[in-house]
Amino acid sequence: MRKSIKYLSIFITILLVSTSCNNKKINKKSNKEVKEEITTNIPVYNFNQLEPILYKQSNKIVIINFWAMWCAPCVKEMPYLQEFANKNTDVELKFISMDFPKDIETKLKPFLKKKNISADVILLDDPDANTWIDKIDPNWSGAIPFTIIFNEDKRLFYERSFESLADLENEIYKNFKQQ
Image 1 (spheres, rainbow, N blue to C red):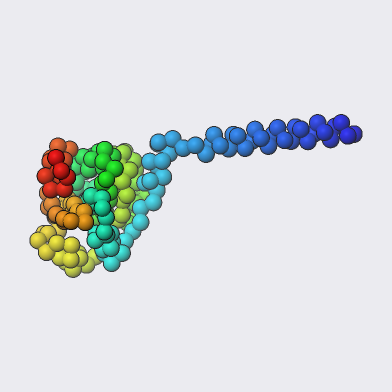
Image 2 (image 1 turned 90 degrees about the horizontal axis):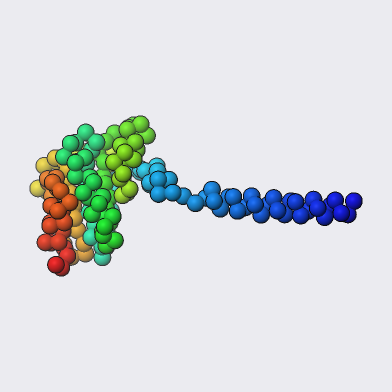
């Protein structure tokens, strides 16, 4: 009886150890899984919730891009913005989606996944655009894409799309980085 209890306890110990090791393997995440996690959390903000993000103090370069899935120039420039942020650890990129909240699960998340967008995405849902557009930049017509690039020393507004990664790099290096 004692011998069988001893073997049973050894078997249980081996089973527990192998199960815990298997859990460690399961918990490791691939890059694909990390990208999926990034696109699972898309908060919906009104302008009052978004405004502090637009004016945060940072020693990094912050790029905030207003866009929508239905805007062809917006979609075209997104990979350039993402690539620039991926290459530069001193850059923080946020995409502000102007799409509909009802489309987050069915359209927006699949779109971001397909385009390999891993930057933070916030959906702006505030119908009083005439008020908040002027608060962001009185010269902004409301057209998208619209990009704000700033750091602790400078804030610039771009009511245009960036035509290439080189176009974006030239603008940032000219205004924000020492060459």
